[in-house]
Image (cartoon, rainbow, N blue to C red; front, side, top):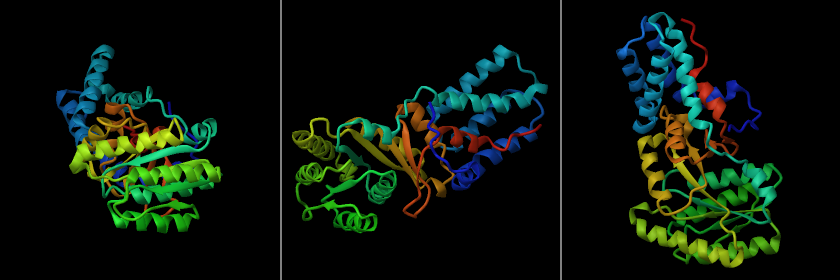
Length: 320
C-alpha cells in the first residue's frame, strides 16, 4: 500500500509541500468553519476545492460520488459535519490502497545485475537533473551506477549529464551530438556489464511534438538494449513537472500510449500549489509515484510517501 521507509519527520515533509498543503488545507479549513450544516452547496464547495487543487475531473467526480453515497447511507445530519472531514480524507486515502508501489532498492537487489532504468519525459521537466539526483540517491544506498547520455539531440543535455556524473562521481557513456541514441544505450550496457555495476540510468530525448519519431526511437533503444541484457529496460520512469498541473495528465496519457511506464518521478513539488496532481495521476493511471523532487539541491529527491502526502493535505485536524 504505502511506502514508509523515509525517516524524515512530518514537519520536514510538510515544509517541502508547503504551497500545496496551504492552498488545499486553508480552503478546506475555511469551508468547514464557515458552514454549519451539511447541504448540497457544501458538497459543491468541496468539489470546487478538489478541482482547483488539480486533482482532476475524473478523480474528483469519483471522490464526490463516493462521499455522497456514504453521506446518504450513514444518514449524516447537519450537526455531524465534522465527520465529513474525516470521511473526505478516507476517500482520498482509499484511492491509493490498490496501487502497487514496490521498493526500487529491493527490485534492484532481487534482479540480476545490472538493473536498467530508462528515463523518459518531455524537455523542460527536469529529467536530466533528476537523473543526477537519482544517481546520487542510489549511490548513497550503496549501489554503483553508470549513466548513458542517449538524449543526443540536445548538446545541453549531454553537457549537463557530464556535470552531474562528475559531481556524483558516476561514469558517463556518451557519444557526439546526433549520434544514434540506441548506440549510446548499447555501449552503456556493455560497459555496465564489464564494470559489474548495479544500476544503469539511460537518458532519452523528450521531443513529444514528434510522437511517432519518439515512439520509434524509444522502441529501438529497448530492442537494442535487449541484445545485451534480455530484460532491459527493467524499469521505465516517467519524469513529470508538478507545476504544470493538468498538463502533466496529458503527458502521462501520451507516454503510456507507447511505452510501459512502470513508475513516476514528480519534480518541482515544493514550488507549486498544484500537488493534487499526485492524487489524480495515481488514481487515473494506476502508476505509482516512486520519488518526488522538492528542491534544487542534489539531495532534494525523496522517496514518495503516500500516507505522509495525504496527511499533509489534512493536518492539523480540524476541530469544529
